[in-house]
Structure formats: C-alpha cells, structure tokens
Length: 282
Figure (cartoon, rainbow, N blue to C red):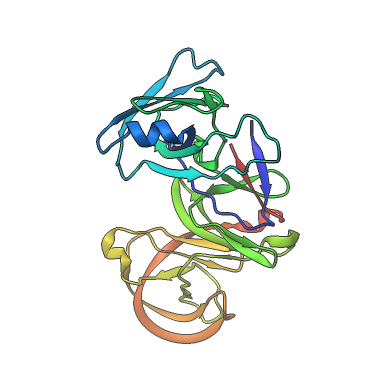
C-alpha cells in the first residue's frame, strides 16, 4: 500500500533500499523475571513472524544482554482504584533488526531466552515505521509526475521547507533541493546545493551554456547548477575558455569577460512539474 504525505508538516524521512532494511522493534516483558534472569552476555532470540500466533519465524537474530544495540527501560504503570489484579511491572525492550526483503505487514515479534516472559502475549505486533519501507520515498508533483527519489534530511515546517532529492538526467543522478514547498506553495524554487554561475561566450547570455569548475571535478564529480528552473549538467571536459557573460539564480545576465576552466552542459527544464509537491512512501 502506498501512502502520500503532503509536504506541509514537520517530518524527517530516511530513504531505505531493498538491500538494507532496518526494522525497529519493541517487546514488553515481566520486569521481575528479566531482572533476575538476564545478565551480561545472556543470549536472547528475536524472531519475526507474519502471523499473530508466531507459528513460523521467517527471520531470527540473537542479541546478548548488555549489547549496546539492546535497550531496556522499566515502564511504570499506574494502578487505578480497586484494580484487580495489579498491573504487571514491565520492562520494555527495544532493538533494530536487519531482516532480508521483502517484508509483509504487519509484523509480529517473539523474544525467547532466560528471563523472558512476555506481557499480555508472547507474540507481539510491531508498530509500522518509515524504516520498514523497502523502496525509497518519491517526490511527486500535483499531477503525480515523479521528480525523483527523496534523500535524507527532509525538513518541512508550516512556513515552507527543504526536500533534497535525486533527479535523473540522461541516466545520471543529480542532487537537487526543492525549497519553500509548504502550505501548497504555487512557486517553483530549486537549487543545486552549491550555487554556481553559468557562462557564455556571447555578451548576452545566448548560445551554448558553459559551467565552471569548483574544484570537485578532480574527484570525478560532474558539475551541475540550477538557474531559475533550468538544471545544467556538465557534459564534457573542462578547458580554458574566454566567456563574455554569465548568470546565476541570484543575478540576471551580466556582461563580463574572463578566461576560466569551463565545460559544455546539457540541460533540463523543471518547470514541467506542477506544485504543490508531496512525498510518497511506497
């Protein structure tokens, strides 16, 4: 089932891949038995199941007591007047498992080992999280067209926000950021993360667009820039070139002559995408 999240409220998404699925789990056990039975190095088996009876584990992982990846916390349950029997004293276990994809939903967890007595049931349902999604989130426009795959670090507030994503040009991925897309903003505002100028051999910013080298080309990283809604991507080697005009997202066409290392570009127009945008979990 796919879920679409309007880009309006604060959220943080982590893009997950089918090769690395992390599933946060939690499990409630009796505090008394856990405290008495589990010590440093005590092996505890975490089993993932697809049915509420935990009749057959499709994945299991052993985590020892005292392991940094195993968190435990005593849960205080307040007794109400005349409650009988008294609520059990609970220890809440938390861990992150790494099962292979694909995953069913919902998932159930059973933990076994010395000192483990499940509270309520020994087969406990797990709350779905973004981390259990196998495919990375997609950034889509209002027509359903896909802009690209969302990267880590989405920051959205009620006044707007930032969504970093990978945009594909000619089979190559370009790292871009779309800005100010909260509250159904009707404007298009993109950037490449590190603003660069686009140069021309003409004096009026006409003709082939050229891109400057900011030093990362020595690390085999293709240069790219965004001016308005146009993405420019390096499409050839750098060479000393005399330009007579340039422009950027902050400045219009400026006549100025200089000889610097420039490379040819290919371009793509992002204005074909219609805001507002949304993040879709697959």
